[in-house]
Amino acid sequence: MLSRETGRQFTGFSLIGIVNTLIHLIIVTGLVELFSVHPLPANGMAFISANVFSFWANSRWSFRTAVTGQRYMRFFAVSLAGLAISLIAIAISETLQWHYLAGVFLSFVFLPLITFLAHRNWTWRTPD
Image 1 (tube, rainbow, N blue to C red):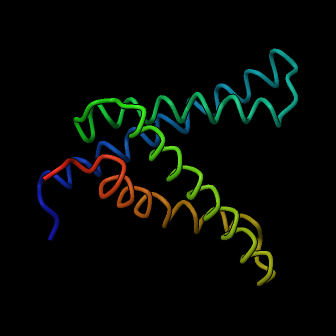
Image 2: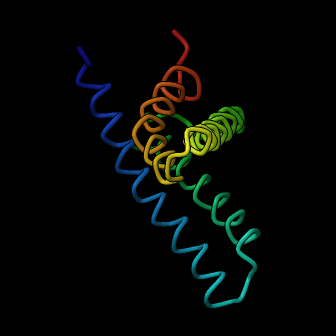
């Protein structure tokens, strides 16, 4: 059974994830469509911007902890692990000759829970 606090954290984490996704999409499409930036660097800039926002917002609202460089490095490591999991899911779906969106869907289903648990138990873990 989840505690009320864990439920509040997961709800905040999920809502910030939705906003974070919108930020990423707005930045990448704006850079590509309005400023003719190549999609690869545009996506990189969008990822960094959204990642920093997500860390700040989750630190402030979901986990109510201080924003520190050490926490951000942990957050960034979990973010990169999430990216690796997404790429692995797509590779598996392609190996199984599924549509590539099946891998994306699997990432959307499992990644939020995996990253929430990693962040809760490592990134924003508070000393006992």
